[in-house]
Length: 150
Image 1 (cartoon, rainbow, N blue to C red):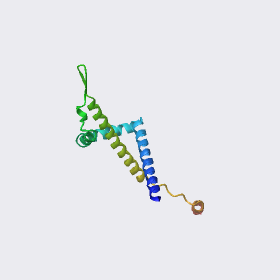
Image 2: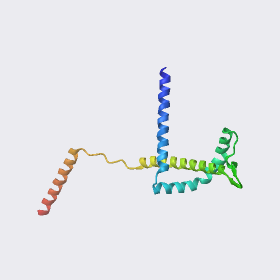
Image 3: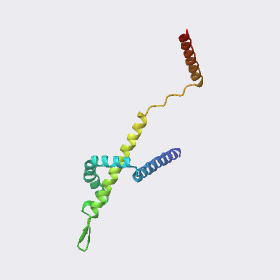
Image 4: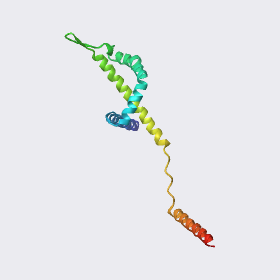
């Protein structure tokens, strides 16, 4: 009984973390920040071939098997004499989502690395130590003034 409760708590925690990550991802996608856009364009173009290969050669065949062997790239609809190749659109949407997820993960990792690299703030000095240092400096200045006069 206790094991079931622990498993439920663990499952709920995983769901909460997943929802938080999805929420952060949605905010990331919807952001209009120029820097994020620039990062997305640069990284997206740099990893475009790799991601396309992952999608075309690995994911799409697996998805095709799962949904009954449908090949998205060949899906089309004939309207009169026009052919609408909506399979290519589906393929491009999946490419975009995978690229966006990759950029999101990389940005999150870089953010964590930047937080670790930032310098830790200097510890606050004890007020008594500060006061004693000020007194020391004043005494030192007074001693130097006295020596200059003599």
